[in-house]
Length: 280
Image (cartoon, rainbow, N blue to C red; front, side):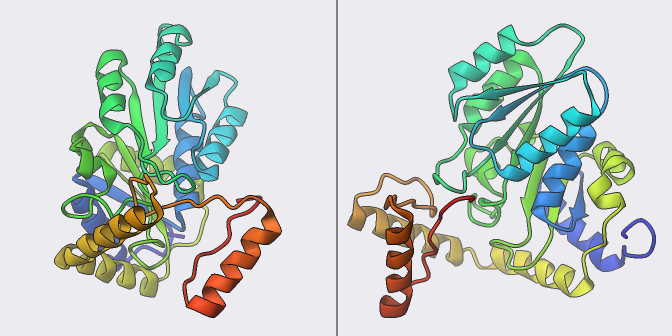
């Protein structure tokens, strides 16, 4: 584990890179993005009087982290707001919160199935109004969005208002692992309380080194983001999609037909467009 013998200078250097990318004091590594969300949320919600507000389309790892935290703590209340519905979130923050309770809002920044962005500027306005800890999962936006690849928070200009940035190293970074970018005091908390960190194997050094280079390439070669933006606009224009991101869902309907189309696209045309079906 990282706390016993699995933490090296390579790990420290990668954490520094991530904190600079996310403009935070610190960052802490996890074995995966899933482990990062579960470890973070289960530890934050495990004690004290707390209300957590979660978008209804948040990733399974966020949902499971919340469930685990609530299982630990009978004084944790969970409120799910309608997808990207800021009026509903505002209403819940006003009506469901009692005095002397901590409040936490958690959302994906770029939703993996629908391809739409969280309304981060509006959420920040609600944060200024109500006061809460803000967590965003940047799994699908890190190195994809923002001038420097900092993610959706950078793209919307709200990085400084986000308390915790969760992410993965297995998508645009092209390696393996997960992270939480945060304050120094929060890192100290997670190193002591985050069970998916404390009791899990540290990331192998080859994965850490490849992630370092992935971030370097992503920042040194911004043409990659511009090229992706051009491809996205091209597809949007050709299929008439109103998608705002490179995640462009095309709903087919029947499962078997969806599988057949995906198979044809790969075998006959050379495009890897995986079929999405239950349980994902």
